[in-house]
Amino acid sequence: MRRLVSSALLYLLALPGGASAITSVVGDPDGFGIDPTGLMRASASHTDPADTDGDGIIEAGEFLPDWNLSGSVAVNNGDTFDFRDSAEQAATDGAQYTDRSMEPNGASNGIEFSFVFTPPGAGDPGFETGHFVNFVFGDYDVNPAEIQIDGQTVALIIQGGGNDGLVQSAFATVPWEDMTDGEVVISVIAPNEPYLTFDYCLLDLSRVTDGDGDGIPDSLDVCPGVHDLNQWDTDSDGVGDACDNCIDDPNPGQEDADVDGIGDVCDPTPDPPGDDDDDADDDDSSDDDDAANDDDAADDDDAADDDDSGDDDDSASILESRDDDWGGVVQNCGCSSTGGTALGWVALLGFAALLRRKAPWPD
Image (cartoon, rainbow, N blue to C red):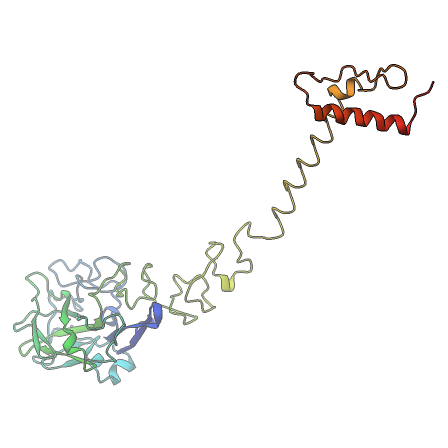
């Protein structure tokens, strides 16, 4: 049997900042508890499946089965059923009226589905905001067809001809002022209805959406993006087995650093490829300071220094030729009598005198 949402379960959906949203359900979205395999809807041909899309669950827009293929779904016609589980049978919030046929005439009139909750506080999602009651029922075809929500009457649409046993979904807004007491009560008005069924009632911040088409409202679905009737959650982390990347290890965040489909908490190698500080450190290879360093190769001071090669001062020494003891003759100095300065000449003569005093010229 499918493991589904238990009746009157109150969900606290964690949201950023510690706030919480409230989703409360009476009954459970299990297609009235019916396994529709091989069952047909009421029709002249008796060949039209009750589960029109064949996905294994009876949803809004599909049909209750014509159990005895009589061509109609009706009281005292062999269409009685009761698929309530033990919790639903013992319930007092209205779940005891779900997953069964309510008959005979007037059996549904005045029954109530009640939600008891803590109203959202200031700063919480839904604070001072109207909520929605979503209601899934089948074979409502006799006037009056109405429900009352905290005393406000909401008309329902009666199924048209040729749609015997039609399953419908209705919704109504619950004003914020009716939420502040922490209780919302739905009453069914059906004094003349002999055969009526209910699947579930949902109080939520939005209308029912079912993105994966599995009949489970997104706000209750443990895998809202995966068609999953079982709704199993082995590790109880709020993520169903059908979409959990670590089925046996709780990981509500579903972290998967290396994006290999296996969650970090159960992945023996959770690091992304290339995320290794020891393999390719920029400081260990191809460092600009170790290769082609301007100070170590082609240094202007070490190679082709103007003082070591091709320098005019080196190719013709200022003391290459001289006359007797002093002479003072300087050749090829590269100096210009017009461009030189007195200071420059004094420096040269002083340097020559110093050399002569330290190393006298031989006779």
